[in-house]
Structures are given as structure tokens and as C-alpha cells.
Image (cartoon, rainbow, N blue to C red; front, top):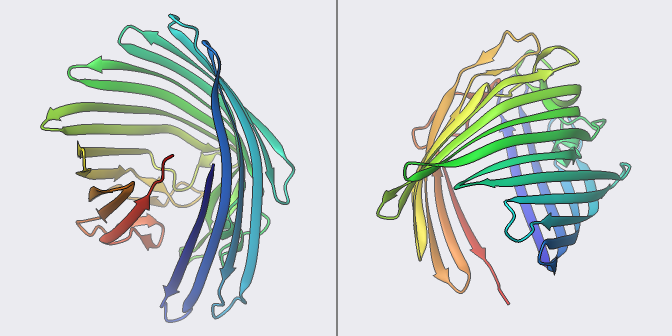
Length: 336
């Protein structure tokens, strides 16, 4: 059994002399879930659960838009059966989730997965339906929200293999997504402002690769790279806006009994910022570092620094990535 409550306060200020913009957003989220796992027999492990969540946001007044109060809620139940006969190299996963979002017809999304042990390696294949309702920000943020947004419906698949390589583990996965009503940000004026809209039909195909290896002394290095050779808006026959051509990263981490620390580098490839495929945003990379310390009794504290080099390239057209950022997180876990 889990319960949670989250809060967010966001002050957005754009001091542009001709059109100054100042607004305050507060968001409160509350939810709960019940989940159980039991072994039906030596070959079947059943997982079943129920989720509920509610959001309430107040989008404060700007110079041009009156305050807006909006709320949303959803409930869902799900069940999954993991099938793995003793001594068999094959295992299967069959799942079903039923969503009941507020103001939208209920939807059922199934999933299926197969895993085959190949010596020291593993071959995996998965297929699932997907569903996402637009967030309150996407629908109601003053001046930039689109209240008429429709939920996304999609189908996803992946086929991958992992094998030992040297002292580490390498993996390669081919994946794809076909989506109806994909929610993307599109330009709405000549100032670089954007707003979310639905793309009637979209198709994404890509390859994901990673390699993790120990370096000694408790250190481990992970390198990853994802390439998106196809990310198309099939309705307009253009590339999906802001979908990078590739992403990648390096992560160096040392885990210990009382905590962990490390550094990472994240790479984002070029993106298109208009529907004519002419405005192209440059690739960029940012460096971060983190330290996590266990204080005992289930309490942990994490300090993270992002964009240490102060990169100011555009993440979206007209909006640079955040400068050097410091975050501090305290977490508490209770076990019984």
C-alpha cells in the first residue's frame, strides 16, 4: 500500500520589453495505490493492483490572461502474469491495464513480452499498447495551453539482445512506436513561442545501445547511445518537432554501503524546430555530478549539480537549457 502527496510552485517571468509575461503556477497531486504479488504455482507469478490519482492546479494571472483553476483525476486497475517454467530458458509476461481517466472514455491497454536465455546472454521481445492523457500544463498554462488536446493512443514494440563483452555487459535494442494524437509542441508565432497540439499519426523507429563495465575500486562506467533514424509526422510528412536525431551519455558511478557518487555527460543531437524541416537546433552536451548518502533508518540525502559548464544552447527554439543547477533531495522509506 502506498500513498503520496506532491506539490509544485513555478514562477515564470519573461521580461521582454514589448510583451512582459509574469505568471505563478501551483500544482497539488495526491494519489494512492494497492499492489499484491503472489506465486500461483512454480511457473506463474501474479501481480495485481489498483491506482488512483488526482491533480489540482492554479494558473495565476499574467498581464493578459485571467487566473485558471483546473483539476483532473484518474483510476486504473491492472494484472500481470509472469510465466517461467522451471528449467526452461523461456519466460513470458502477459499484462492488462484498464484506465478510467476523468472526462475521457475508459481504455484497456494490453502488453506481452518474451525472454529467452541464450547461454550468458538474453534475447527479449515486447509489444504493448499505450495511452496518455494531456497534463494540466499542456491544456491550461496561460497563453500556451491547448484545452482541446486529445489523449495519445499508441503501439510500442522492441526487440533486443544483451551479451557479456569483456568484463562488462553490452546490449542492443531495436524499437518502434506508432501513435495516434501524439502531443508535440509546435510554433504559434514569430517570437519562438510554442503550444502543444495533436499529431494525427506519428511513427518512430530507433536503435538503443549500451555498455556497462566495472573499472575496479567499486567504480562502474556506463555508455549509452540511441539513434532515431525515423521520427515522422505521417500527416504532414515532416520530422516530429524537437525529437533529436540521437541521444547519448556517459555515467561514472561508485556505489558503497553508505551511498554513492559519480558524474555523467548527456548528449542531445540536432532537432527540427519548424514543420518545414528548415530550422535546426544545434546538438549539445551537458555535464553533471551527484552524491547520495544514507543516513540510516531508511533516510537518504542526494545532492546533484547539473550543467556544470553553463551551456546556454537552445533546448527549444528561443529557450536555452537551464544554467548551472543545484538540487537537494531528502527521501525516507519505511519497511515492515
